[in-house]
Length: 193
Image (cartoon, rainbow, N blue to C red):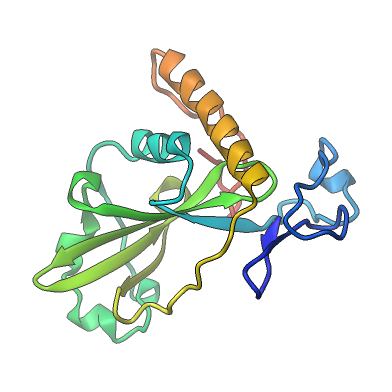
């Protein structure tokens, strides 16, 4: 399901009524006439309206500090890169950042991108991270394009809650903590979370 311009959530190619959950799709996306293999839409949940299991899963996957590779092309607008505290932003520790939003696949309910915010010397910086800590955008909250609040279909909300609760149960049962067995493809073709 993809949000439409007016903020409603519409089904994608399976029915024409807005706000209604699409019937189960073909097991293989390539078998679906409306979805090209590897192509899917996303729905953004703010941290305030996201299902609890989704937030738990994001925090589980992002536990512990990590080093981000920040390139000039990651900054939006580009001139922010010259003024950015690159070293502080690159030393990413989720404990120092606030989770602002999570993008999930509209077909699978799994998260594909996260948005984090942090105040550094009076400027609120925003980083969008994808799979394997891929940096999609670095900007300031003031420079970020405002996003309209979108109504999310309650059925889709329940679906995301159920999917992420099951994934968390599997992760917590896995004593090794190794998530290399997952094979979901991300926007950039990398494996998912």
